[in-house]
Length: 174
Image (cartoon, rainbow, N blue to C red; front, top):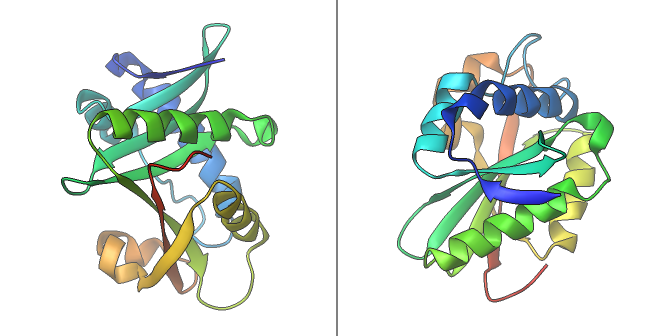
């Protein structure tokens, strides 16, 4: 498997489909039925900015992640996705490592990611992700309201949620 920066907007529909399939399972019950997390136009914009990594196996996209600078020293990692039937096969780990290497090469010294979680109760997929991020060296630095980050999507939530903000120094390795 190879992880590379996507350079062709022709991948936008396929990448959006992978993200939406992963999030439909991973965030089941948090969103109003039928809500999608992204669309091909948004993904095409991220590709144009050099911010989409794709994991390729035998010429097929099997996973993706997005990256972007937050400030001069901090990068943001998001949309780490593979189809649910591929979960546990190492695609996510390779995408995270590729994103960390890419953003380190672009001058970032720290990387951040956000995890949407319900305010009450436990969401098994979110607990699994939290544990996975922590095994990769990410640590929760704060919790923030959903509205602070994604006000425009508040009507699409099925229940009250918040974001856990994780950070990791890029001098560490996963």
